[in-house]
Length: 351
Image (cartoon, rainbow, N blue to C red; front, top):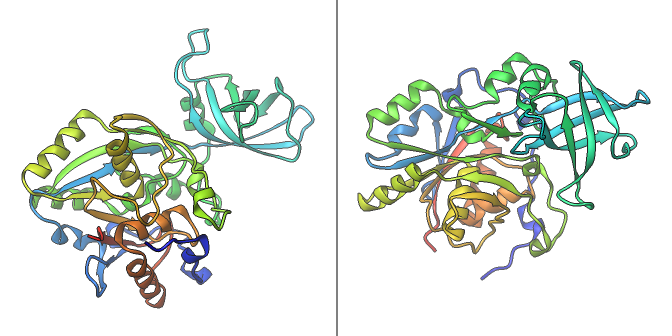
């Protein structure tokens, strides 16, 4: 088996192909049908015709939080927090969900116990690093419920390659139409192409639907820095595979249907569940070529960053050579890339 290295997943992407805004209509994006050797250029609303009665489409129903918060230190220095996770439980005074874990952007890190004054009139008190004393993230106690504060005062955590400040359009479009469980700081972008009309078409065709939850973290944009992939350590994300979805997965196999994962986050959730037999918890699964998939048959995904873990995942799923050919075709025919970009449909490599 070929041993792949980081440089194998590099490619030159013209900057103008990085989508800065979504398509005017969700389902009007382009769709590269890569389920065959020769790719076919389609429009996303053609997807239902590519699926079969009895197939099971699995969505990630996470909801993107307005997780970017701005404030200042007692000295007046500016601080930016990106809430990665809201911790369960209460702070002891009956106020739920005041404890958060966040990335902190600041010129000089404040000391533990420092009270930050945040835009909107609330405070964030630094209580230490996370998950331990040497962790890269920070733990804060907010002066009110974290979800409520983010809804009122937060900003949409757009990816680093989107250059404009968040707008009302982003608040609406950087969110799936079926977003349910708040906890993500990045959208499950393949699902952004679905609108209510397209979901109704899937139902009419006899395609079943199920949901998992994976709260996408900012680590999804974390670059791989080691040429040897075995040395890379994946970020951890919380997931849940409800019993109703577990039952649907059993039923689809019984009727000979296919499991269609909408996005790499759904793949990571389903394959983590299959590996660990745990329906919920944290996963740091790192899928690279050679991985043995147990659940997913088809993958709908957007186009990913060069040298990223997501490039490695799709190459593991559909075959490295095939994926790289598809990317060359997408660049040559000017598909739009990344979160607000176009999509492609892949079949699992049988080898």
